[in-house]
Image 1 (spheres, rainbow, N blue to C red):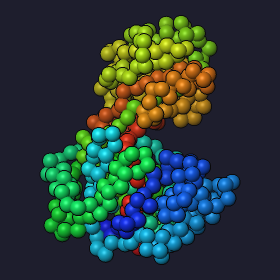
Image 2: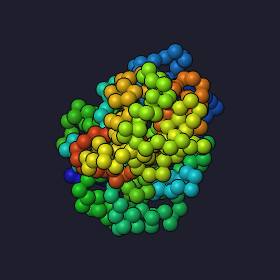
Image 3: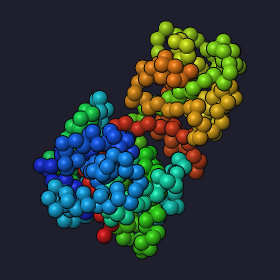
Image 4: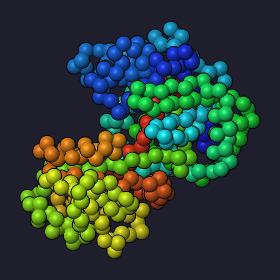
Length: 407
């Protein structure tokens, strides 16, 4: 059984690709999805967020939503908007956003290898979100949201993917957010063999984003009781070289200063950080450095080097900030459950932090340096778990470019 294998993808016919491609299901709420799909009958949001075709007060987890999703998938198949590949293929998927380009392999990855942690994890999952994806997969008999994976860059594998991109793509679409999605079919048997063998030789590959999708695929595989070689024994993935991945900062905003004045807060912080007032928004220059915005003033914080350990989790910037400031000074010990803290993806910019504080909604904001892929892989290799909201990957994979049917 292979770590990855090709599959007969379900994908839009080229002339409808631009109509179908949609943002991932989990980056839009129902109202946003309804607005984005307005006037677009073939948008994949009608499958991934089918509540948009039901009354506005419909619970997104209602059984009717999954049934509507299956109905909409059948409608798109019957209309010829989607087609199934006639042989098992790999695909190459290039994303370009703001000058950043990454080129990866679309494949299905082994559930068995996921279960033994050869497909390595770094986050906990929540049962309710797993349940949702299980019900979606079962309703469609297909996996429609790819898991974002990474492999440690290897020149031979990278070169094969680049060589594929010299041919004509089957899809080249620029979405309304400006991200370019380009897609090639790899149906040459020798190239398929080289890719399969190359990945089989790897010790591990890494989940970047999509822990709930991979966990739900594992649950579905167990219910189907396959022999390890059935379609349901693999899950839809896009796998990029780790050095092409783009992680943005994932920043923090907190509602109050836990009873401290600004001066008292600064005094407490100075026991673990050097603190420098700045005239402009602080985007940290490297690990161990943070920006803090409070009462209209930015500060640059640099943690004492003596506090940085060799532990792969404790040495993360998100951990350093939590362990030496947010928990001991601001009293937030569990960021998963404490309503006083919120998280702001770096895609929104530092102006969003200022806005949340200046409005009075929040009292203080912290900007962080992005977590590196090397740090993520070190955590996964140690079989450890990152703190919540440690990574924000951009650009996002599109839904609808290709799906994996489980028959």
